[in-house]
Image 1 (cartoon, helix red, strand yellow):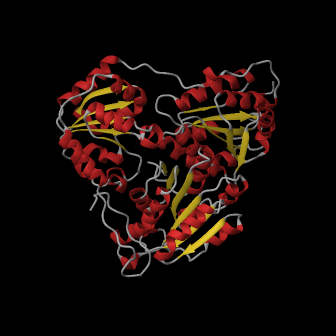
Image 2 (cartoon, one colour):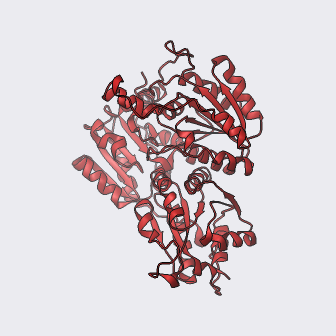
Image 3 (tube, one colour):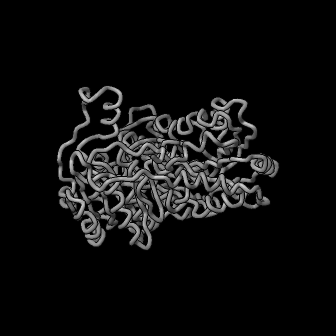
Length: 533
């Protein structure tokens, strides 16, 4: 069996059916092997797009999202989304072509130490140099990506290893599965005891335990622990407008349980909850050390364990009956708090971001199943606060923008029956505009709704606040017709300037059955603060 076939058979054993990829010389053996194994290749227009697509697919399926690009410049093009996948805790297997082992040190075509390039961005980065090492790397890579705190793994595939014949058999499904990791019962009892003593506890989950990935876990945990449970996925942290006034409740808490949630800038390094005791749970020793650095003696209990396993163990533990209904209600009310919005901006007469999101929500409400994608700076925050689908993907704690069309395509492949709507700004759509052609070619229709305010509004707002109106620079964009560009790439386009035309345009876009762009001229307003006011 060729090394390339070993790769594709191992992926099939892991339940992989689709690889998101951009072709190149060094990975042609794997393309050829995909024909033998029956794996689908969705080939993209940029390497970064393949990683974003695999990220979304992994989030929605809970399985390995696989992307594959060629060596050196191809791998380098994909590094940004790896950072996003790491912080979003997505089990992505990132495969790259590589120069032959036999030519190491001789100046081979596109020879580069790719392991050194990707190691800071992944849980694990490997370069197998033989068929036996390749098999071991595939097993270890899959298990590492799926286990503990999920995240991306990189395997560089030297060309001669892919071409080499061997009698090594591919790994089984059991070998490629994430490992079940035991949790110390004493550690669970310690968390339960701290919760029982608290009057106003908050349980904060990391991205891997968010509702879109775990279903009713949050609701079940809240009832079992008789405590508010909130997942945090946004780089705006406690100021995430989709969390309403939650940030204000943190200061009132007497106990914070960070269950897989890194104690970092998104939690204000722990300062907003200065009077609270902390319980910290993480699968990564480095995150526990970070928590110690930021919290010091305020940590009253810590547990080095997989957060998902700890959550399940808490569900299996005897329930807490502490009568915290009033506290839970207050926190729930704060999370749901939203500032009112007008349909049109009184200064410009344009549609407001809030009204645009409300129209999208009406469209989502009519869909039996939906995935909403929120991507971008200012408008991305409006989208997070104002829209809700059956499932949700946002651009994650990394704060990177631009993956919206790619996330949407990956989501449509993962959930082909769902209505997928991606909300993004006019700056955001420019990163991967060519992927609308990929979606049309792959018959993976979604609707991109562009909140078009003619600028990079997040930076515009920063400059306005910090430097003044006469110091605005480098933020203006044109009146480009992104809807017409999407039509030219094989999709459906809608252009909207009036609020009364918006609902019908969204319905036409969904009904078109094509990848679609609804380009909405919008007022450039600052995002909600996250305070809920």
